[in-house]
Image (cartoon, rainbow, N blue to C red; front, side, top):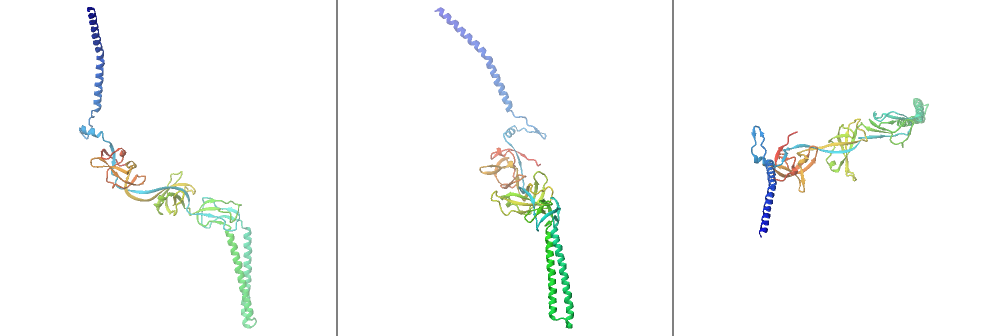
Length: 401
């Protein structure tokens, strides 16, 4: 019994000693953990502490609670748009061409071309000879007819002289009344032959003049399709193309809706492809029909002559179809959802309120607001997509450019 008691007593002391050693070993870990937690709490408290208010105009903003609230509110840019006069601009593209293109061909019998007197790009007057055709045979014919005219006139003069002498002798009884009638008929026949010969000569001369290829009106030569030595006839087709007066036009293709807003007389700006120079023009004709295939029509824009305007080239047009007064906003201010288009306006407490609007044309200046605004509201220009109705914000007035 004593042996067992002594053995159990020693075991108990050993266990107590081990427990004391374990507690001493855990104590540094516990202290370390407490220190780390304390440091984390201090850092978190410093991050949450409000920053000192900056001084503005000699005063310090001390309302810490107010600053804390503003830190949770979004900053938005607003403006009072007012009313703006906006031009209705329609754009289109098309092909440059002569306003009035005159095809010139063979008007007479034709023949071999002897000379071509103009080149593309030359200015010509009405009736000016563009090319000449060989007329050696026709000239001889005209000379023969001219000789016949002279013969007929001589016969007519002789018949007239015989008639006058006979009229002087009829009173003396040497010539009867019947002889006078015959001589009068002879004189009239001779005069008629003169007129026939003159008509034939005139016809031949007119045919000879038509052998020359002439400009029907003043203008600019665009193309030439004939060379000296070429045999031409009435079936040779177009030999020259002339732009009457040198006037050009752009045949701008517009959508059916845009065509309804264009009227003859409105101004336009035309820019040829590949260049930066703009040319002023006027819409002089609006197509009365719409192409059923592409649902487009043509607005013809008249342009003055310029070497940079080449028929067949491609160009773009900017047509000013009118103007209207209204509220204009940048596209960033207009939002849309399943309920339609809307903007946010700020009330007296700087709270964002949703305002339904109806949009109109979109131009370079922005989006026209047809209905919903009168221009006096404080309209949110940016950050509107992140707002909710009745949300308080920090407004910043947009500076004028």
